[in-house]
Image (cartoon, rainbow, N blue to C red; front, side, top):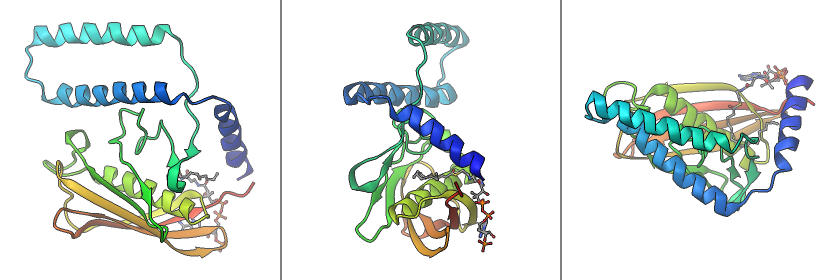
Length: 213
Ligand SMILES: CCCCCCCC/C=C\CCCCCCCC(=O)SCCNC(=O)CCNC(=O)[C@H](O)C(C)(C)COP(=O)(O)OP(=O)(O)OC[C@H]1O[C@@H](n2cnc3c(N)ncnc32)[C@H](O)[C@@H]1OP(=O)(O)O
Protein backbone atom coordinates (compact mmCIF):
# COMPACT_ATOMS: atom_id res chain seq x y z
CA UNK A 1 0.00 0.00 0.00
CA UNK A 2 2.31 2.75 -1.22
CA UNK A 3 -0.55 5.27 -1.00
CA UNK A 4 -1.09 4.97 2.76
CA UNK A 5 2.63 5.13 3.56
CA UNK A 6 3.17 8.22 1.41
CA UNK A 7 0.07 9.91 2.87
CA UNK A 8 1.23 9.27 6.46
CA UNK A 9 4.69 10.55 5.60
CA UNK A 10 3.29 13.80 4.13
CA UNK A 11 1.13 14.48 7.20
CA UNK A 12 4.03 13.68 9.52
CA UNK A 13 6.45 16.01 7.73
CA UNK A 14 3.98 18.91 7.72
CA UNK A 15 3.29 18.54 11.45
CA UNK A 16 6.90 17.93 12.42
CA UNK A 17 7.86 21.44 11.27
CA UNK A 18 5.85 22.97 14.13
CA UNK A 19 7.63 23.96 17.33
CA UNK A 20 6.01 22.51 20.46
CA UNK A 21 5.84 25.09 23.24
CA UNK A 22 5.65 23.11 26.51
CA UNK A 23 4.18 26.02 28.49
CA UNK A 24 1.36 26.28 25.99
CA UNK A 25 0.84 22.49 26.01
CA UNK A 26 0.49 22.59 29.82
CA UNK A 27 -2.17 25.32 29.58
CA UNK A 28 -4.04 23.45 26.83
CA UNK A 29 -3.87 20.21 28.84
CA UNK A 30 -5.50 22.07 31.74
CA UNK A 31 -8.23 23.34 29.38
CA UNK A 32 -8.80 19.79 28.10
CA UNK A 33 -9.07 18.49 31.68
CA UNK A 34 -11.73 21.09 32.48
CA UNK A 35 -13.66 20.20 29.28
CA UNK A 36 -13.61 16.50 30.30
CA UNK A 37 -15.22 17.45 33.62
CA UNK A 38 -17.78 19.48 31.71
CA UNK A 39 -18.53 16.51 29.42
CA UNK A 40 -19.32 14.30 32.40
CA UNK A 41 -21.61 16.97 33.86
CA UNK A 42 -23.53 17.19 30.57
CA UNK A 43 -24.65 13.64 31.38
CA UNK A 44 -25.00 14.04 35.15
CA UNK A 45 -25.99 17.61 35.97
CA UNK A 46 -29.35 18.17 37.65
CA UNK A 47 -29.51 21.83 36.53
CA UNK A 48 -32.93 23.06 35.36
CA UNK A 49 -33.68 23.91 31.71
CA UNK A 50 -33.12 27.68 32.14
CA UNK A 51 -29.72 27.05 33.67
CA UNK A 52 -28.82 24.54 30.93
CA UNK A 53 -29.75 27.12 28.25
CA UNK A 54 -27.67 29.80 30.00
CA UNK A 55 -24.63 27.54 30.30
CA UNK A 56 -25.02 26.48 26.65
CA UNK A 57 -24.88 30.15 25.59
CA UNK A 58 -21.74 30.71 27.66
CA UNK A 59 -20.05 27.69 26.10
CA UNK A 60 -20.92 29.03 22.63
CA UNK A 61 -19.19 32.29 23.54
CA UNK A 62 -16.11 30.48 24.85
CA UNK A 63 -15.91 28.37 21.70
CA UNK A 64 -16.19 31.53 19.57
CA UNK A 65 -13.28 33.08 21.54
CA UNK A 66 -11.02 30.12 20.75
CA UNK A 67 -12.22 29.98 17.12
CA UNK A 68 -11.42 33.70 16.67
CA UNK A 69 -7.71 32.95 16.98
CA UNK A 70 -7.93 30.70 13.91
CA UNK A 71 -7.18 27.01 13.40
CA UNK A 72 -3.70 25.55 13.08
CA UNK A 73 -2.57 22.03 12.30
CA UNK A 74 -2.55 19.24 14.90
CA UNK A 75 0.66 18.64 16.85
CA UNK A 76 3.04 15.96 15.61
CA UNK A 77 3.64 12.66 17.36
CA UNK A 78 7.09 12.44 18.94
CA UNK A 79 9.09 9.87 20.85
CA UNK A 80 9.27 10.97 24.47
CA UNK A 81 10.96 9.73 27.64
CA UNK A 82 11.54 5.97 27.79
CA UNK A 83 10.66 5.44 24.13
CA UNK A 84 6.96 6.22 24.62
CA UNK A 85 5.30 7.97 21.68
CA UNK A 86 3.73 11.24 22.81
CA UNK A 87 0.76 12.05 20.63
CA UNK A 88 -1.02 15.07 22.10
CA UNK A 89 -4.12 14.62 19.94
CA UNK A 90 -4.51 10.84 20.41
CA UNK A 91 -8.01 9.63 21.35
CA UNK A 92 -6.39 7.24 23.87
CA UNK A 93 -3.42 9.07 25.40
CA UNK A 94 -3.73 12.62 24.05
CA UNK A 95 -3.48 15.21 26.83
CA UNK A 96 -5.15 17.69 24.48
CA UNK A 97 -7.87 15.34 23.25
CA UNK A 98 -10.98 15.72 25.42
CA UNK A 99 -12.28 12.34 24.16
CA UNK A 100 -9.17 10.60 25.54
CA UNK A 101 -9.34 9.28 29.15
CA UNK A 102 -6.27 10.12 28.80
CA UNK A 103 -4.13 7.14 29.76
CA UNK A 104 -0.39 7.34 30.43
CA UNK A 105 1.85 4.56 29.08
CA UNK A 106 5.30 3.49 30.29
CA UNK A 107 7.66 1.01 28.70
CA UNK A 108 9.40 -1.40 31.08
CA UNK A 109 12.96 -2.65 30.71
CA UNK A 110 11.63 -5.89 29.19
CA UNK A 111 9.64 -3.94 26.55
CA UNK A 112 6.24 -4.37 28.24
CA UNK A 113 3.94 -1.38 27.75
CA UNK A 114 2.00 -0.70 30.96
CA UNK A 115 -0.63 1.69 32.19
CA UNK A 116 -2.83 2.31 35.24
CA UNK A 117 -6.05 4.27 34.84
CA UNK A 118 -9.62 4.70 36.03
CA UNK A 119 -12.41 5.01 33.47
CA UNK A 120 -15.38 7.22 34.37
CA UNK A 121 -18.93 7.46 33.16
CA UNK A 122 -17.98 8.82 29.73
CA UNK A 123 -16.72 5.33 28.85
CA UNK A 124 -19.73 3.34 30.03
CA UNK A 125 -21.16 0.46 27.99
CA UNK A 126 -23.28 -1.94 30.05
CA UNK A 127 -24.58 -0.09 33.16
CA UNK A 128 -21.68 0.30 35.58
CA UNK A 129 -19.12 -1.25 33.23
CA UNK A 130 -16.66 -0.14 30.56
CA UNK A 131 -17.79 -0.21 26.91
CA UNK A 132 -16.15 -3.09 25.03
CA UNK A 133 -15.07 -0.77 22.23
CA UNK A 134 -13.22 1.40 24.74
CA UNK A 135 -11.37 -1.66 26.10
CA UNK A 136 -10.51 -2.61 22.51
CA UNK A 137 -9.24 0.91 21.80
CA UNK A 138 -6.99 0.87 24.86
CA UNK A 139 -5.59 -2.60 24.11
CA UNK A 140 -5.07 -1.70 20.44
CA UNK A 141 -3.13 1.42 21.35
CA UNK A 142 -1.14 -0.15 24.18
CA UNK A 143 -0.24 -3.06 21.87
CA UNK A 144 0.82 -0.59 19.15
CA UNK A 145 3.16 1.03 21.68
CA UNK A 146 4.58 -2.40 22.62
CA UNK A 147 5.21 -3.15 18.92
CA UNK A 148 6.98 0.22 18.55
CA UNK A 149 8.99 -0.35 21.74
CA UNK A 150 10.09 -3.66 20.23
CA UNK A 151 11.55 -1.72 17.31
CA UNK A 152 8.92 -3.17 14.95
CA UNK A 153 6.11 -0.57 14.66
CA UNK A 154 3.19 -1.06 12.32
CA UNK A 155 -0.49 -0.57 11.58
CA UNK A 156 -3.00 -2.80 13.34
CA UNK A 157 -3.89 -5.58 10.88
CA UNK A 158 -5.87 -7.61 13.40
CA UNK A 159 -7.08 -7.43 16.99
CA UNK A 160 -8.46 -10.65 18.45
CA UNK A 161 -10.22 -9.86 21.74
CA UNK A 162 -11.71 -12.02 24.46
CA UNK A 163 -13.90 -10.28 27.02
CA UNK A 164 -13.45 -12.55 30.06
CA UNK A 165 -15.54 -10.64 32.59
CA UNK A 166 -17.05 -7.15 32.79
CA UNK A 167 -14.53 -4.30 33.27
CA UNK A 168 -15.74 -2.07 36.12
CA UNK A 169 -16.07 1.72 35.82
CA UNK A 170 -14.68 4.11 38.40
CA UNK A 171 -12.08 1.82 39.96
CA UNK A 172 -8.32 1.57 39.31
CA UNK A 173 -7.50 -0.74 36.40
CA UNK A 174 -4.20 -1.67 34.85
CA UNK A 175 -3.22 -2.91 31.41
CA UNK A 176 -0.12 -4.41 29.85
CA UNK A 177 1.04 -5.40 26.37
CA UNK A 178 4.15 -7.13 25.10
CA UNK A 179 5.46 -8.09 21.66
CA UNK A 180 5.80 -11.89 21.68
CA UNK A 181 6.78 -12.73 18.10
CA UNK A 182 8.02 -11.10 14.91
CA UNK A 183 7.55 -12.75 11.54
CA UNK A 184 8.82 -10.61 8.66
CA UNK A 185 6.70 -7.42 8.63
CA UNK A 186 4.27 -8.86 11.22
CA UNK A 187 4.58 -8.27 14.96
CA UNK A 188 2.31 -10.23 17.31
CA UNK A 189 1.46 -8.58 20.64
CA UNK A 190 -0.36 -10.06 23.66
CA UNK A 191 -2.21 -7.68 25.97
CA UNK A 192 -4.72 -7.55 28.79
CA UNK A 193 -6.73 -5.29 31.07
CA UNK A 194 -6.57 -6.29 34.73
CA UNK A 195 -9.36 -5.52 37.20
CA UNK A 196 -8.94 -4.46 40.84
CA UNK A 197 -9.02 -8.13 41.94
CA UNK A 198 -5.93 -8.83 39.79
CA UNK A 199 -7.83 -10.94 37.25
CA UNK A 200 -7.88 -10.15 33.52
CA UNK A 201 -11.17 -8.68 32.28
CA UNK A 202 -10.14 -8.52 28.62
CA UNK A 203 -7.29 -10.20 26.72
CA UNK A 204 -6.13 -9.63 23.17
CA UNK A 205 -3.67 -10.76 20.57
CA UNK A 206 -2.91 -8.14 17.97
CA UNK A 207 -0.97 -8.24 14.71
CA UNK A 208 0.86 -5.12 13.54
CA UNK A 209 2.18 -4.85 10.00
CA UNK A 210 4.62 -2.27 8.76
CA UNK A 211 3.13 -1.03 5.45
CA UNK A 212 5.27 -1.43 2.33
CA UNK A 213 6.64 1.89 1.01
C1 LIG B 1 4.07 4.13 9.44
C2 LIG B 1 3.85 2.84 10.02
C3 LIG B 1 3.06 2.82 11.24
C4 LIG B 1 3.57 3.83 12.13
C5 LIG B 1 3.20 3.65 13.55
C6 LIG B 1 4.41 3.82 14.42
C7 LIG B 1 4.44 4.98 15.28
C8 LIG B 1 3.33 5.02 16.28
C9 LIG B 1 3.68 4.36 17.53
C10 LIG B 1 2.82 4.28 18.54
C11 LIG B 1 1.54 4.93 18.40
C12 LIG B 1 0.47 4.21 19.11
C13 LIG B 1 0.04 2.98 18.50
C14 LIG B 1 -1.18 3.16 17.70
C15 LIG B 1 -2.02 1.92 17.76
C16 LIG B 1 -3.21 2.08 16.92
C17 LIG B 1 -2.89 1.74 15.52
C18 LIG B 1 -4.03 1.96 14.60
O1 LIG B 1 -5.08 2.37 14.95
S1 LIG B 1 -3.70 1.59 12.99
C19 LIG B 1 -5.28 1.91 12.21
C20 LIG B 1 -6.05 0.66 11.95
N1 LIG B 1 -5.37 -0.16 11.00
C21 LIG B 1 -5.42 0.13 9.68
O2 LIG B 1 -6.00 1.09 9.23
C22 LIG B 1 -4.68 -0.82 8.79
C23 LIG B 1 -5.35 -0.94 7.45
N2 LIG B 1 -4.72 -2.00 6.71
C24 LIG B 1 -3.62 -1.78 5.96
O3 LIG B 1 -3.14 -0.67 5.82
C25 LIG B 1 -3.00 -2.99 5.34
O4 LIG B 1 -3.91 -4.04 5.32
C26 LIG B 1 -1.73 -3.45 6.13
C27 LIG B 1 -0.63 -2.38 6.03
C28 LIG B 1 -2.03 -3.75 7.61
C29 LIG B 1 -1.19 -4.73 5.51
O5 LIG B 1 -1.23 -4.58 4.13
P1 LIG B 1 -0.05 -5.08 3.19
O6 LIG B 1 -0.59 -5.01 1.80
O7 LIG B 1 1.19 -4.31 3.52
O8 LIG B 1 0.23 -6.55 3.66
P2 LIG B 1 -0.56 -7.94 3.34
O9 LIG B 1 0.03 -8.50 2.08
O10 LIG B 1 -2.04 -7.74 3.38
O11 LIG B 1 -0.13 -8.80 4.59
C30 LIG B 1 1.25 -9.08 4.85
C31 LIG B 1 1.33 -10.42 5.52
O12 LIG B 1 0.59 -10.33 6.77
C32 LIG B 1 -0.48 -11.31 6.77
N3 LIG B 1 -1.61 -10.74 7.49
C33 LIG B 1 -2.39 -9.72 7.13
N4 LIG B 1 -3.30 -9.47 8.06
C34 LIG B 1 -3.10 -10.38 9.03
C35 LIG B 1 -3.72 -10.63 10.27
N5 LIG B 1 -4.76 -9.89 10.69
N6 LIG B 1 -3.26 -11.64 11.02
C36 LIG B 1 -2.22 -12.39 10.62
N7 LIG B 1 -1.56 -12.18 9.46
C37 LIG B 1 -2.02 -11.19 8.69
C38 LIG B 1 -0.75 -11.59 5.31
O13 LIG B 1 -1.32 -12.86 5.11
C39 LIG B 1 0.65 -11.52 4.73
O14 LIG B 1 1.33 -12.71 5.09
P3 LIG B 1 2.48 -13.33 4.16
O15 LIG B 1 3.57 -12.29 4.09
O16 LIG B 1 1.83 -13.57 2.82
O17 LIG B 1 2.90 -14.56 4.90
